[in-house]
Length: 104
Image (cartoon, rainbow, N blue to C red; front, side, top):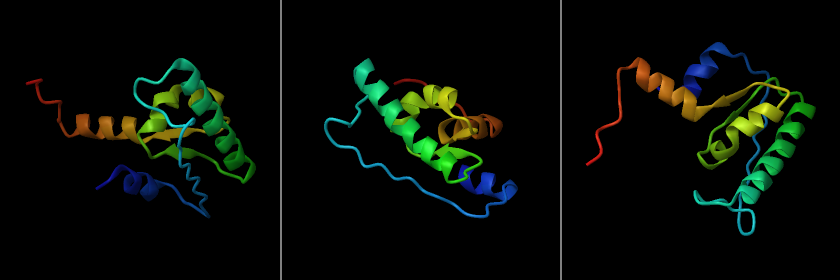
């Protein structure tokens, strides 16, 4: 079962708001992005989180990989709890006894 399904088993939602960002130059981020671009991404996503809070969200989750580059900063700025699919998946994999395969 996927992590989101597990979360939804214990959370009672009365509504949902999904924020979808489609990034293109100059807002796109690559793994080798500069610090300034990551700051821009954090600012952009932090503004989106503020909108979610204003709409009444009690928590938010980051479901895409790229925003996890700034997850810790977003969590620091956010007035509501943030769930990370990367951390949740890692914890679940460890609980199942899974590990990375050795480098080839």
